[in-house]
Image (tube, rainbow, N blue to C red):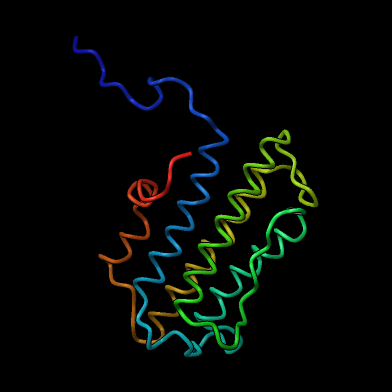
Length: 175
């Protein structure tokens, strides 16, 4: 019988805290990939199903929610400036999201070092990180839907870039 090829599970234990930070940063890399794929001509257009939000305001919302979490839980850390939903550009969104993702990753690390607790965010750092990833994935889904509604869909080939977690994971810094 041929021995099984070694897998990640057989290489020894993983650092779950570092894996959590990297998972969060991988989700951010997917945000950045979506920003790169979007047709800039639809950035501010209102989709027929949502008169209150558009693609630009949704990316600003993701960043601003991160800033709110950092204000509540990241006392003592540098809080990125919020984005103005009314006039945010794609480049501003890319930069601000990168900055707030770095700050959120630092909050996750500090919370892990503090035993997994996050100020003003029960029950723990894993729940906070998973809620953030889920929230952002929800908005990415809306944005992809709106792009289709606005006549500039994310193609099947482009969608694969959003779903290829392993490739996006490789594009993030290791802890």
